[in-house]
Image (tube, rainbow, N blue to C red):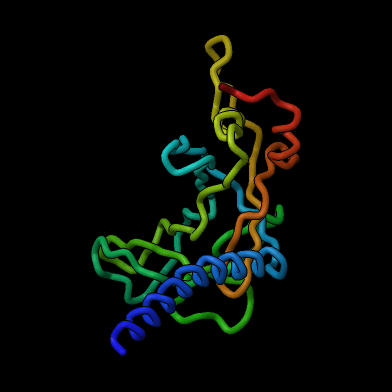
Length: 194
């Protein structure tokens, strides 16, 4: 009888371990298919980490601002909140306000913020910061997104933004657009950096 219970427990653990990644993939695909599209302007790009796979790390302009978060006065404490999304006059996403309770309408993202002893929040962390690429495309993409020196002159990169799908507080990056073109188009046109 004891052996049968051990095998049943083992079987349930294996089933759970196989089902969890599948459930995560289904959720990710649901956001991509049904989520509302928001464009997030990127800030300067951080270098990639070769140990975590082929991706570029992204910073976003929407992560900085000035929000009031009453009751968020614990110094240096990381907190969770919901950022209500708005679009600026150019159509790019920004966080309009922060609130503790899950919104019942409108587009929002669950995010982290940090306070420094008062109710003012100047920086939030969006739940997405990596855009994954095909093997070998990371270095080329980074080079396109970082300022370059040419004849003692710093040349700024083309403007870039991420196309992000948002659904019920979840967000998934769908594309990275540089200078008005998908990064995939650029990568087909630009030789790979070694």
